[in-house]
Length: 50
Image 1 (cartoon, rainbow, N blue to C red):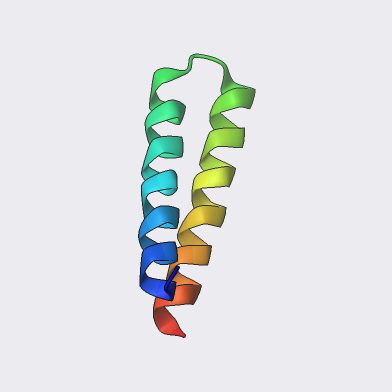
Image 2 (tube, rainbow, N blue to C red; image 1 turned 30 degrees about the horizontal axis):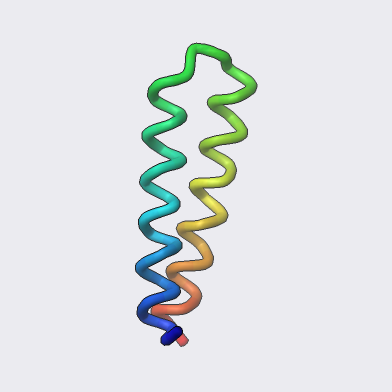
């Protein structure tokens, strides 16, 4: 898999986590989803910049 495809995957996962954060009513779950989203976003950015 190319870096671009990996970056696309991480961007998709980021959005899925942000969507999950919006749907949940539990503040701890929301925080976990947003943390995961941030990690996926960082990974995607890292791959695009490489």
